[in-house]
Image 1 (tube, rainbow, N blue to C red):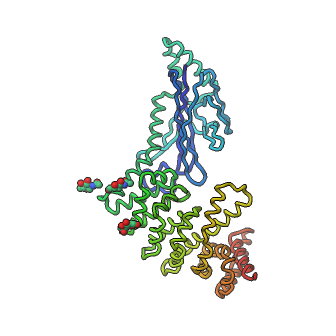
Image 2 (image 1 turned 45 degrees about the vertical axis):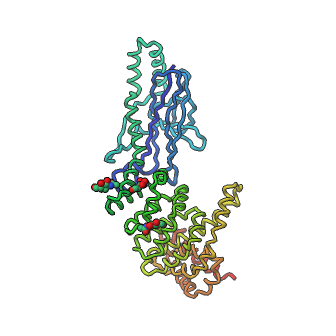
Image 3 (image 1 turned 135 degrees about the horizontal axis):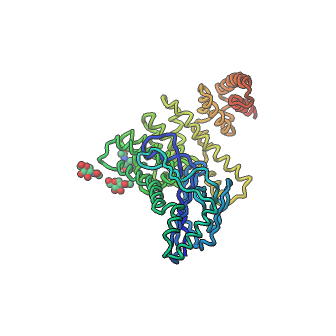
Length: 478
Ligand SMILES: *[C@@H]1O[C@H](CO)[C@@H](O)[C@H](O)[C@H]1NC(C)=O
Ligand SMILES: *[C@@H]1O[C@H](CO)[C@@H](O)[C@H](O)[C@H]1NC(C)=O
Ligand SMILES: *[C@@H]1O[C@H](CO)[C@@H](O)[C@H](O)[C@H]1NC(C)=O
């Protein structure tokens, strides 16, 4: 009996815009290269699971899922050699895959899919000094060759005395197992490296002997790594999240700033890490950074972290309201010297308003399931708009219209419209808002003409003009 060991070699080749350190070169966009090599070795009646790591590059973030897929025992004679084309095709259990093909796991169907490879051999970034790409040339086979080799190999193994020659023939065609093992090791190194590196950084950060500079450096390196969803989750499981949260109220402002930065990146689009951070008390500490005298750099990072914590997380939003977060943001908005943060503050509020609106709209054309009901219930507890009115935002948001930045004005207009129902009366009683709107109307009418001159019909200025006019119309309504 022979068993087919399909050694799956893969690597997600990623590039990052930001190359800060030597680990960074192996991270980046989610392009998946799957390269399968097949190797036949003899074994006895034991089921031999083959560890197959599945990597999925999802659109928003780099989520990695690892699955063990057991390749069933098959008589090689029964193995069909798969003929990949340039289209993705579903791979049936027991299909042999010629080297050089791309194999991916369709996470929706759970089936493996194969297509013809465009790249030759295995490409991955090698760790170390992080430079360059290693291209291991794998032999390419036609389906026929593979079938023949299988057959030869089986015959050879049936007759152990006379195996040498066939074996060599097979070895000539198939990559030696040692080579495959080396590739696997290189791969495992890659997979493990992030965890190892994070461990080292956490130790450096947690070591009382480290200087502040070393600690800050460790945090910044961590920040880079936790953009990846699984790294952020590992940060939690390694106990690093709590260390980072504790550093938010460290006595050193540089540590406060870097810790807020790490936290914000770790919780971005990462619901399970958001939960951990809120439960670890991150929100209170961040709000203290926002509410007390700190350098702008610290406040900026703290605001970033707050925004990431609140995004699509109604539990954190209710918590934020209870902790007086809106009031703290109002005060920060009006702090002299904090003008640069104003648009970010408005964005946090605007995102919360529209999130809640969107979720109730989505509910109308969905069959409501229990998780949707739960989300609706959670958002229902976030009574943001009344608090915004109470904290003076009907008057604060219009102030942003005097900014020279188009995108600040745009954000202000969208927020004003989102608060229309609650702020209508106050808007009408605000003469400077009326003046601002009519000035903006004139200005953008002219800008729209310049847009049209260059052939742009639905340009950005046209969009802003539509927002201005919508404000004017809605304010006139009773
Ligand atoms: C800090 O340094 C001292 C003296 O060099 C050493 O004895 C101690 O083990 C170090 N502590 C840590 C946590 O590395
Ligand atoms: C940080 O150091 C303390 C002792 O200095 C230790 O008890 C703790 O486990 C360390 N935390 C992590 C996450 O390494
Ligand atoms: C930070 O806050 C925790 C409790 O929230 C407190 O125990 C700790 O002493 C504070 N650290 C500093 C440096 O103030």
